[in-house]
Length: 140
Image 1 (cartoon, helix red, strand yellow):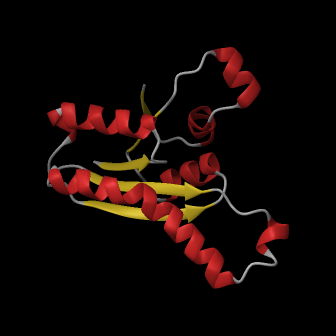
Image 2 (cartoon, rainbow, N blue to C red):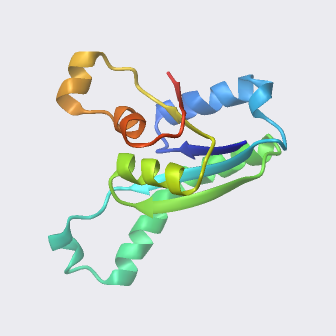
């Protein structure tokens, strides 16, 4: 099974990884994991005055901060995973990659706010579910 795992390094990512580790059916060679970190784009006015190589370095550093402990986790579990870093609006990038990459499942952590908070703030998880046809497993 091809599984896309969006990660941001938050406690919700850690909770999702704990769920993964606690359920043997998610471990093993029969799963193909792709971990995705989406860095928010630097505003265009600021990006216009920053050297492109500095900007690329910034995005790479932000993703590597998230990926470093995840590489250790997947290495300890002896699970092969690929790591992909992108820049943009998280929900849009996740949904687009899930669809274009023909993933079987998107597995992501969520904070589980109530409907009022979601209405006011929005939710990456809700937007992903609304914008892609790939099944989404939400770990709270």
